Length: 274
Image 1 (cartoon, rainbow, N blue to C red):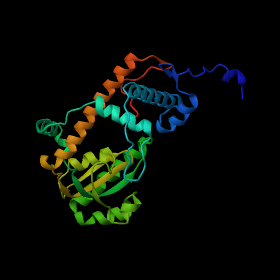
Image 2: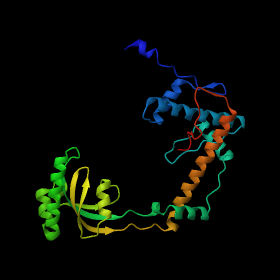
Image 3: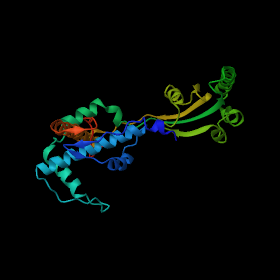
Image 4: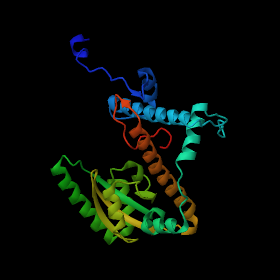
């Protein structure tokens, strides 16, 4: 190891809240709960979460708040500190329950969220050609056009072409059948082609894999979930969103009163609400 390099790395700053130091080894243990692209980002997220925890603990002690630890269905119990933070938040961060009008407004403004995905039943013949090979792409397109003309003229020949020409070996063994497909199960280009087709129609879909001669067998449009069935889910979502914002605001107020050294606290940081 080149010691001259390691010696140039900055040492982590001491992190404290109103004079209470958060030990580096505690931050190191917390890092596992904050996955990130870079180690420094995970370290910072862990440090911020522990700063928030310390702010809440100090405030619960200042207000003399104590609470009986609760147990979850698996029998795991809160620590006294966790119970105190929970009781503090329940007392100080009061959020209104969303009413019927708010739930209905959210439903109307986000109707797509409550619609089941379209269901397609399709088959294909893949003529593979990598995007990095323009000549092969040209040849593949020509082959796909020829097959499209043939199966359009004689639909019953699709299965034979799939078994003899398709580079998708899995579906080729099943006469090109892909089974039932929903959103996200195929690449976007293939999905877009399906959306433009009518049952019984043949078409060519160009994707990163090559050219697909596609046959759409059936299409079942998605259905809207009635508001009555969606209301509970909407109410939970809105209540959680309001709680997130209220808790972030409360933490921001506590941070503004405190002396925090070693790290800048993100306003949204909270170890209690994910």
